[in-house]
Image (tube, rainbow, N blue to C red; front, side, top):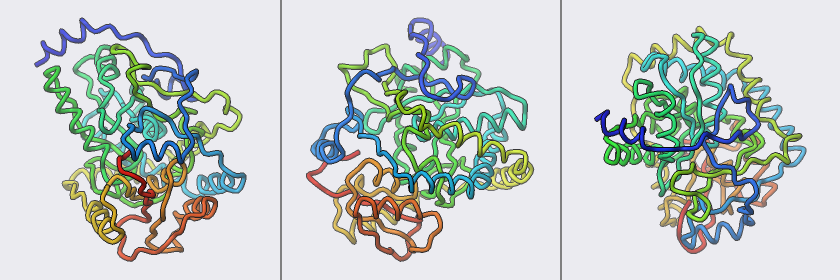
Length: 383
């Protein structure tokens, strides 16, 4: 098997990545083509109509939501209240990676929600084990797959003896886990080398992953905002007229928002808690590793029930979990928000965003997740 991939790696010429994003290169290297000079944003309603009419979501970008002062204040308050909880979950998933696979690996976060989580895992491993694991952030797109050039580049740089550990922020329905599994199969068929589709996430409320820090559907503060908590990076873009066959998938670096950037504040604040949570994290990780993780995809039962209750044919219009509901409110056209209870402390920002956009919120008894966002059905098509 290695002969096939080794030959491919020796023949493939991929340019070195361009410096991008507001994180230090010691924290992460983005394997993305800089499209900052290209006008890709479309107004929310226009973009929604295009997506539901069949235009792929990766061919355009949403206009970034500009939060109110009240919302930014809520972010800071939430970060203060939950930094220790986030640190523990990040430390647990980091310990589980080390227990399962050791230290000779490469962290590969999925841009962009996975990027700050990958940084936290890298920092924790450096603190706890003194190991400087390489960390890259790459693109994976539902309906189009993983950036194979980025994967080949990492294998060129670090060899076939180093494992690639994929990292994301959280799970909703588990769509990206499914894309990663399919990408692993496709890569194996094409290159004779199988990528491990084990996706490490901070939170797995959808019960889709084996390697996770927690399965509680709580508010991860980095889900509150878009680029200003993700290294000032846009979502990733893949269009044939912009991305050549030997290039990485693209993204924009919003340099003009540097003065509003909270990306490093988030990872620095959480990282400060690592000494306090390390021993507890190790004990939890050992206990979790000793018992087989249940991957039941039980969150999908919620989705099917919601589809039936509200007459929604397209499953992609139902976005479960705190992180995905936040995304619906920040960059889609929301129809309604379902919550498990109105006094859930993790939903303050959801209620604030819903009020700001005039979106109805209702209690949905028995919800597995804390909340669920439903996108307004227009014509058909998905993101």
